[in-house]
Length: 427
Image (cartoon, rainbow, N blue to C red; front, side, top):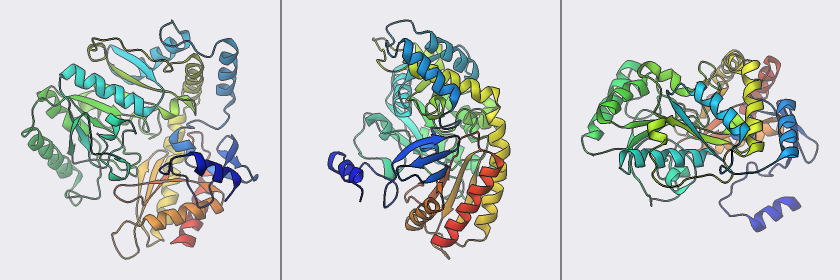
């Protein structure tokens, strides 16, 4: 155990998890690589939990941060803030939500917390629909709509939450159905659930479940849900904290895979937009955003420095078509990983889209999740020079792969080769 690890344990909560038996201290990064305190270089396929979206030490972002910090670092939302207004204008346009208003926060948790506040105030109800296997953050309200036991730290809640089927395609009671019948069954489940409630405020859903192991329904499920929600006046909150900004390749926002009945009423974002800076936010129709009848400001949300970073990062992403790169290189990577998985009895499924890929592990010869196996592959990948994440439903048995969106073909090939070696060594 290193001295820094010992010091960490002495001052940190027991529940503050660290990856690896011998935790890493990352000291610097460049492009798609990071280095630890011992000088070891790693190919980064997790990006600070999908947060370093474009590249480590991206010159355009570091320059914008440095220049803004030299002018003024903080002012709060009580004063006009040019970078905040400029970024809000761009996000409002990109969101697809008509007459959109934008409120900035410091994290995805706070963004979802704000969305829940808006929805419950607008509807005058504390009833929320959420998806099984979901994750929406670690605040009191966000935990209470998280449908993943591993991350739901209390049963106490300010909300009455009801969980709907549909977020996981290949497990659960509808897994054996065709996509069309799967959607019909989930819609029937939603209709039945609403028959036992009254006055539901909103459905909150991740288009691709992040912490849940990069699971997703068939395209069109949330559009079918929307028809039911609209009949009841229920709002749709799309949690785009992990799926936003083109990571899925096919779409700029995850909700666009379910777009036939229009955009969500509320969209939340965070992580990648700041490329490591602390940025989150909410986009909503004006009538929803403006429904609060008491003062509400943000001390740190929309700070000049984080907004400058977000503007530079978004400009780089759009100008270099990183969504297209995620589609092209992500398509190649998932092909390579499926070939690797086909040769391993421990791999149940390789799934995902763009640069958001999950590899679900099971105990060979069974359909049982294998969290120990996932932990072993994580260690073996690190030993080979590759950093990945993990997640999953009741058991953490899914390898989560989400590199920066500027990943090159050569780096995708290298990462797939290391991961293949890790799977062979550890399972």
